[in-house]
Length: 391
Ligand code: AMP
Image 1 (cartoon, rainbow, N blue to C red):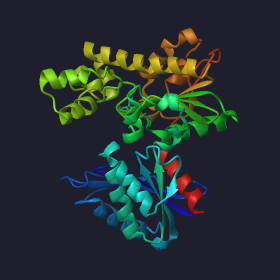
Image 2: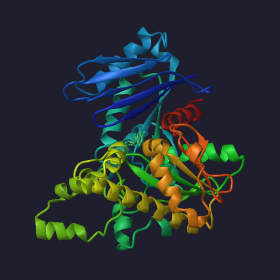
Image 3: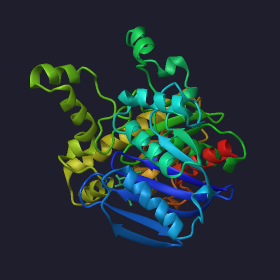
C-alpha cells in the first residue's frame, strides 16, 4: 500500500512516499522557500538527488508539482494508488492522544489550537487542504507531535500558576518532538526485547529530553511551547519568568519583541553573539572562542541537569539515547555529556563514539547505563500510524 508522509512548515513541505508495510522509501524530498523568492525543491529517488528551481507562491503550488512528479516518474500510475497521506501536526494539546483520521471537526480543533503553535498548525492545515484537493480519494491522517506526551501525570504537566489558567486557557506542559521520542522508544524497546527505563535526548536545533518507562512518557523537558527545557540553537530553554516583566518595564519590550528574543535571538546565538549552529560552535571552540566554549558548557549542563532529574524520577535508568542533528552527529557533545555522568557509572567507548549518524552503543562495556546513538525517523512513524489507520 502506498502511503505518503508529509511535514508542512510555514515555508517548506517535506515528503516521503512509502510502500507499506515493508517501509520501502519510493521517493522523498523537500520544497523550500514557499512564498519567498528563490524557491526550489529537491527530490531523492533511486539514490539520485535532483534539485529544481521553481516558483512556489504557496503550498498548493508545491503539492501540484509533487503529484506531477509522482506520475511522471511512475511512482504511481494513478493518484488513486495513494491510499493514505499522513500529516505531521505540531500541536494537538490535550485534545488528541493518538493519530486520527481527518474530518471537519479534527480540522476545526487543529485550527483552534493555532494560538499554541502559530507558526506550525496553520501551515499544517494549508498542507492538509491542498493534499485533499489534489488527492481527494486518499484517506488523510494527522500525527501529533504532542500525542506521545499525553501520558504525563497531572502533577508533572501542571505549572504552579492559578489553576484556572489551566482550566480556562489550557496553560500546561504539552511537550514536543513526540514523534521522534516515540520512534526512539519503540526502537530501543525492540532492541532490548522488553520495555526499559529510557532517557531520550532529542538534541538538534530544537532540543528536548524525555523520561520513558513502560513505553510511556513520564516527563519531558519542553513545556507549554517548545521554548522550555534545555538551551537550544536560538531558544533560551528554561529561564526565570520574571526576566520577562523586567524587560517589558525597564527596556520597553513588547510581547512580539519578547517572543522574538526568547525564540530567535537566544540560546547558542544569544550567548555567542550570532553563532547558532553546533558545528560552528565546535569550530569556535577549536579556534579558542571563549563565548563558544561557555555556550557549549551551558548547553551540556542544561542537558545533564535533565538527565540527573529524570534518573531520580525513573528510579534509575537502563539507557540514555542520543538522537537528532547534534545527538546523532556531535561527538564532542556526546562525550561532554557522558563525561559529566561518570558519577552515575557512565563510561565511554571512544572508538564507538567517533561515529556519526548510525545506530551504535557509545558507552563502555563496564558502563552502569547503556548509551546509544539512535538516528531518528519521524517520517516512518507518520507512515506507520497512517498505514495502521487506513488499512
Ligand atoms: P536538527 O534540528 O535535528 O536538524 O539538527 C541541527 C543541528 O545539528 C545543528 O545545530 C547542526 O549544527 C547539528 N549538526 C549536524 N551535523 C553535525 C555535526 N557533524 N557535528 C556537530 N553538530 C552537527
